[in-house]
Image 1: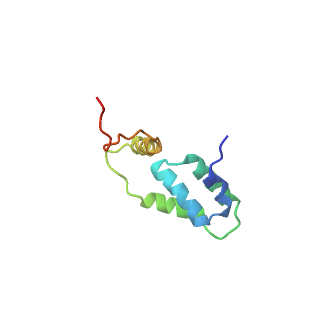
Image 2: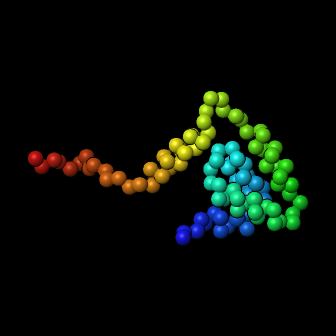
Length: 99
């Protein structure tokens, strides 16, 4: 099973960055596994950063689009990104067709 490099590096990230990943997941539904890893790491830390308040405030401050299915939009974006990673043959416009 291939490991997610971001998840492997969670322990080295700043608490505010980890909390921001949770906000992104809660707002857009992007990268659930990373958000779960970030929450686990935040919960285990003994620092003074109040991640729960930060996450709640930032999530509440995010604009709420009207008449938009965020789950569908997120899936569409993820599909488009996946399509960018697929190599498709490009027709060479400089080659003459020998017919």
